[in-house]
Image (cartoon, rainbow, N blue to C red):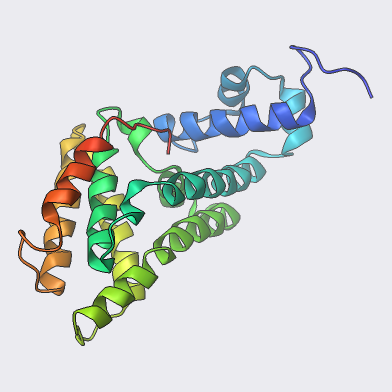
Length: 229
């Protein structure tokens, strides 16, 4: 096996660089507008390296969605919203955390799989399915805390933990779309603020209950974290 060089990196290195380039370029330009040339330039690899690793732009889209799912899962698993002792506090802390990591750079703050799903759901079903798996899997991580909060607070209304977990993603993704349309990150934060109010209404919780002060403190503490997720 030949030794990798700067101009001919080993396959794994080129693949990772292309996935990172796809993550950043597609969030900034969209899937259709992010050409293979753009991706190769951003990753500093040749077209030969691109096709050696992925074969097609569609294959890269699927791999990018899977890469996003893996890396963001690790990031959210380590996030501070898991720390509160009360289940509903953890759900509200999740919303506060999502709000806190929104930056003024809309491309950096927005969701790769949400961006690709809107473009690819008809033209590239394989990309749509990979994006859907990422979003639904992430939503499912909230279900246990929502269900526990329902039991602890005696909520018997006709909605499920699964449906509310999915709705959190509806509010988040919709907030990103509005923020892009208005070129204003505050629109995404506004959406998250309304989501918090809605969850409080579902659980019949006033603003001064469930450790709201500690949740706001968490939000401030993590506002400096601006990862590429």
